[in-house]
Amino acid sequence: MTRAPAIVTAGLRKSFGDHVVLDGVDLEVTQGTTFALLGPNGAGKTTIVHILSTLLAPDGGTARVAGHDVVREPGQVRRAIGVTGQFSAVDGLLTGEENLRLMADLHHLGRTTGPARARSLLDEFDLTEAARKPVSTYSGGMRRRLDLAMTLVGEPRVIFLDEPTTGLDPRSRRTMWDIIRRLVAGGVTILLTTQYLDEADELADRIAVLDRGTIVAAGTAGELKHRVPGGHVRLVFADRDSLAVAAASLPGATIHEDTFTLDVPNDGSVAALRALLDRLDRASVEVSELALHTPDLDDVFFALTGHPAAEKEAVS
Image (cartoon, rainbow, N blue to C red):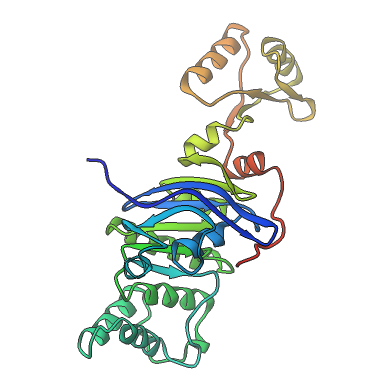
């Protein structure tokens, strides 16, 4: 059964003065999936999140979240969403439990339901032992977990995570990844903006690359990688003679004489690898080592955007 989209934008536009930030963005995010939005600083990622979360009005185009128009029905959109921004929104003077209970009060959960919800989230996010300590004493990873827990107090159906693991150590990042996977498995829709390409590769069902206000590519991680040339097989031989015979049999290969190595353009498919090995077999040459390199999202990102991270967005 086809799932309905949780987020849809069509021709979304936004400018600040003469600076065009979004120039006709079309997106569709399926319910119960993770959608990653990649792009350098200044590409427009945070501006999209601000529009979809009703914090900013678009100049043109349409956007619907959880079936509601972000301009005409902002209240319904806000009731359906949660937002975790680039910077932690927790109060460092309060304890973790007090932060969650404050959020429960803002959601009008009541004297019984609110504290119960706070205790449940503290347990789910492994913060029970630190629940009554000031948040100012928390590590970066603990603060981000609490920040996400506060987003979940109202049980949103759609969550915007705007660079949620920036500044975290590798262990804390993986903890956040596990939490995100659990949320999606429970039916929550995640729109994730990130500059960590491995994060998108690990988490996203689909990815869009945003550059200078437009979507320059979209698809699964595998589909995007196949759009970028550069895949090759690295062959290592035992001696210079074997290298020379192999090179003669494989025109177009790049030769590394000092390491007796050939880099042969190859898409990594079974058929292409079999054909390559058959040619070497017919030439009666033995391969000592074989390694396959396929383009990763770093290759995709730089091939599509053509430049590294640039200046910050006008709205961040």
